[in-house]
Amino acid sequence: MKGSFIGILTATIFIMLIAFIQGGFSLVGEGLQAAWQTFIQALPLVLVAFFVTGQIQVLLSRDRLAGLWDRLAGTRGIILSSIAGGIFPGPPYVYYPFLGTFKGKEFPAYFFFSFVVGKQIYDFTRLPMEISLISPGIALIRNIITLPFPFLMGLLFRRFISRETTARFFAEGGE
Image (cartoon, rainbow, N blue to C red; front, side, top):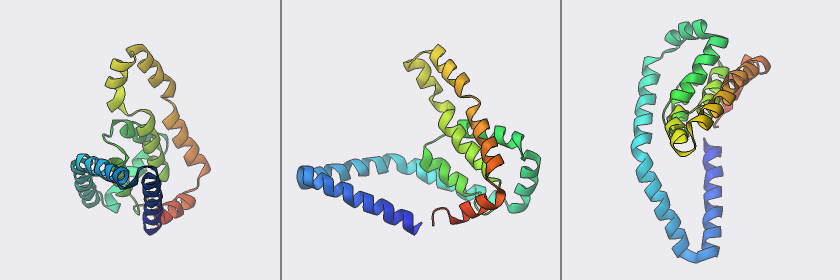
């Protein structure tokens, strides 16, 4: 986490420096004001996401999950996690903390991958907007064409990335 924070802080300082060069303190102030507005709008959603994350950590112990992933191992788990990703509401700052609750519980990593790809491709919450802004036919075609991708990506991840590699990957992630 320390490395991620330093990276984001460095990028922020660099962008603020560019804003200062372009328009002085007033442009930097406008950027900070826009950031504050975004923070205020996102705060309730982030707080609720962390409350849900905390409850999931308490409810889903290692023993409870062991039986669950034994039943869902393989293709069935990939299909369910892809669909769950599409159904799960909210932006990345909501569902990544949710996924973080499973870190260290030896959950198969291809479930995570299928969930994220399913969220990015399906995201069923945007379907009404697609239908109203584009057309029902095009929205249907897009969903039919992209339907197999989360499953295929999950299967490929499971096939080519060993469990040891993913365990190490998640142990080092965010450090």
